[in-house]
Amino acid sequence: MTLEIVGGRRGLPARAPKSARWTRLCTGGSVTFGHLVGDDYRTPRVWGGHGLGLPETDLAGFAVQLAKVMKHHAYWVARAENPDHAMHWSPGRYDDEDAFVYFAGPCTHGDRLPGYHPAAAFTIALPHVRGLRIRVAAYLAAL
Image 1 (cartoon, helix red, strand yellow):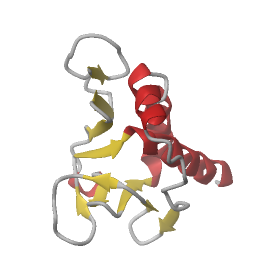
Image 2 (tube, one colour; image 1 turned 90 degrees about the horizontal axis):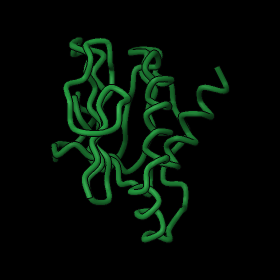
Image 3 (spheres, one colour; image 1 turned 180 degrees about the vertical axis):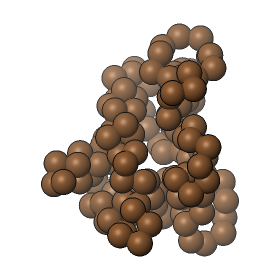
Image 4 (spheres, one colour; image 1 turned 180 degrees about the horizontal axis):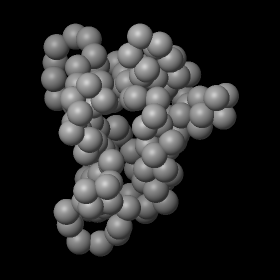
């Protein structure tokens, strides 16, 4: 089952409005998020299989995207098929050097090199979306 949501709209694949920052595409048991800001410095950073770094200014919008993924049937099917609901994400760690918040956890982007690298798109297994949403919400609540 493939479900593409662009710019917050359900339905057929479509181009995201220029004002949209995020896209998401659910396929199989994962969701791929795309970040649509042209500034390479503000591009999310991913360490394949180890973690995700997001600009602190993008966290609220990303939290909305996580919540929207959790409303879809594909999320609930994937979660039911994976009984391991343990927390796989660390609490957010703010880095004042770059104004990013880093979450250690199961995020991929296809690059096998070690360390965090800019990634315009990254993938999270659907059963792990809830854990990241909890960590992002906790970080935002503490601001």
